Length: 429
Image 1 (cartoon, rainbow, N blue to C red):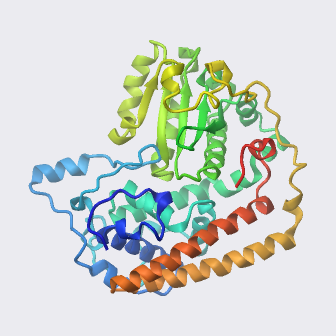
Image 2 (cartoon, rainbow, N blue to C red):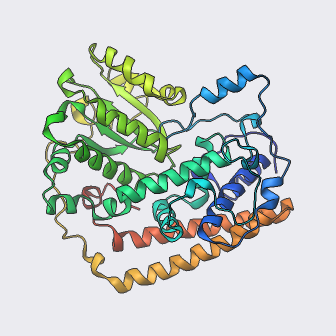
Image 3 (cartoon, rainbow, N blue to C red):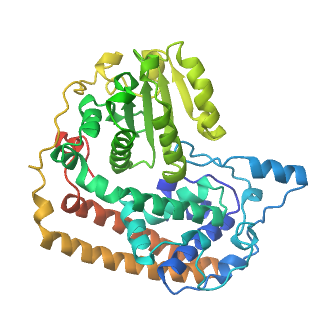
């Protein structure tokens, strides 16, 4: 495999760019998959992947450098999609200080402690949705600078987070369930459209428009705003055909009464820990002078790479560098007549396919076969030692991985209540 350290977009992992993925990074991907397989009880021998000397071990040149790197934050996270390409940043699991033992076939990684293997595997395959399996693994690996043990821990933490928050049910039941159960705090956020997906930016990435001027902490509970935010994030993931999304924080008419640090901290923690390598850019638009001291506080919570993705825009001309005039909402000077004043909640009338259990079961049966085939090929790929064999298996895996994505596109209307975006036609899988 090519030895250049070309940065690969997680969404663009394919047969075409296999030769751009360096040997050391392919080995890290094999190690992470091995860790998952050991949890799930999939028969595989990862000895070759964990003992392959082509991967560069992390070695500090001095105790001072070691201490500096220990204190340094990860450059990954949902906000930051860039990470170091230096091979000296790559660590093998058996040399990781957070494990302390060499690879043993069948031994489950310590980060999975407390997880039910079957539940964990279901959560993993469910959370992919429109993201191919290797793209998802790549995101976590890149977010942890291709340290396989740390990436595994990040995946384990995310699986536990999604289980605790019941994320799949949250998205599948969606807005209709919120309004049916009259969850007033969450309903308020939807009705005010505090965060809404209004279109795509110049790089065809969906962008979420956030309008803090409508937020007042005393109008809903903290868990209400968190639930609302998670639903919006998960819906935005369905738009991500390019692999990334963007966010525009419009601070027009923002005042100190709108500032609420708790949800900001939640979003930062949530994005960096559970939605890695997915943001194209974050625009802070039309910030008033009073935002400056707030920013001085918030930026200290951010990873440096995250902060580097944040751009301040002051007017329409600066906004047009990222979003076309046709897509910018009219109230910001654009031509997009997206109705930001009248949110119409879904009433369930478009959810007929949710009752079609036969149709759903047929698609799920195919999905199980595809996943089984993917795992079979992945086990062979992990154990492959010859480059030619690895490449052939990689190509087969990528093809099946795309079939799994296509399968989800067919499955989606049978398991997910139609959202505002489905009904208005802005979301098409």
